[in-house]
Every structure is written in structure tokens, then in C-alpha cells.
Length: 81
Image (cartoon, rainbow, N blue to C red; front, side):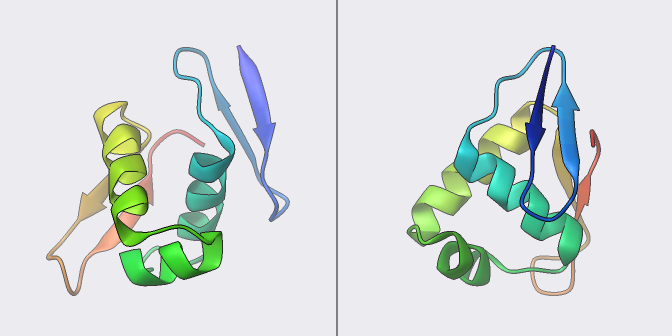
């Protein structure tokens, strides 16, 4: 088991999946603004859109986050926090 301290006074704990610093930042930003877009995530984290997409896929595949609703009007949900 491990715990990662997020930059927004939030902790993320998970027993099975190791998440990296970029994924921790993405989770923090999603918790702060569930309707955040991929381009905004990329800008705030300082990475390419495609890198955000790859990290979101990892987080979705491991049951950490999910997307609810349509692409434009949907929101992110952090399932394990």
C-alpha cells in the first residue's frame, strides 16, 4: 500500500496500482474541476495532449477514474480517492 500526496491538500491511496507524478497531478486537477478538458490538463501539467490521453487511459483502465456523460458536456469522476 502507498500514499501519494497531491499538491491540492488531497491524498490518493491505492493498494494495487502504482501511479506516477503526472497521474497524481491529473487526479488532483480532476478533483478540483471534474469538467476539465484534456487541453487544459495538458497546459497545467506541462505535457502534450497525447500524454494526457495516455495517462487518462491508464487511470480509467485501472478503475481510478471514469468519464460520465458526453465528450463535450461530460465530467470526470475519481472513483478511488
